[in-house]
Structures are given as C-alpha cells and as structure tokens.
Length: 73
Image 1: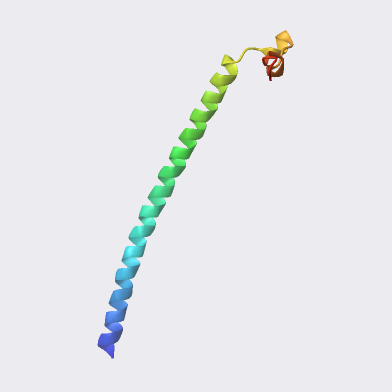
Image 2 (image 1 turned 60 degrees about the horizontal axis):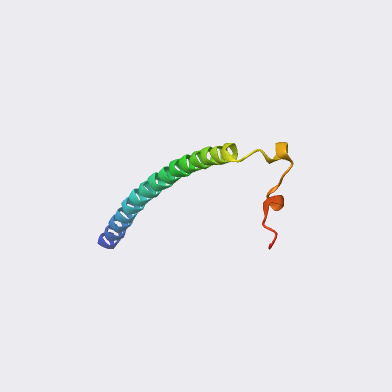
C-alpha cells in the first residue's frame, strides 16, 4: 500500500514540475506578446501622426473629398 501511495505521489510531483515549467513558459510568452503589442501600438500612433501630417488641410480650402469626386460617381 505504501508503494502505491509513493508511486502516486511521485507521479503527482512530476506532473506538478511539468505544470510549473509550462506556466513559466506561458508567462514568458504573454509578457513578450504584451511588449510586442505595445511596440505595435506605438508604431501605429506614429504612422497615424505621419498620415495626418501628410494630408492636405481641407478646412482651409473649404473642399472635402466628396467635392473632389469625378462627376460620373
């Protein structure tokens, strides 16, 4: 009976060790993805700012994109 309990306990300890290792790996993955996401958001903000700066100032001329459509639309 003690051998059976010892075997089950050893099996549970092995499973726990693997789960701890998996949890650490998943935590590292989530942390890396969060860092990547923050970098992508920063790049997106910069691109948006560059896009807005490259746009002509329509408010000064009083024209909108709708005014610039060809007549066949």
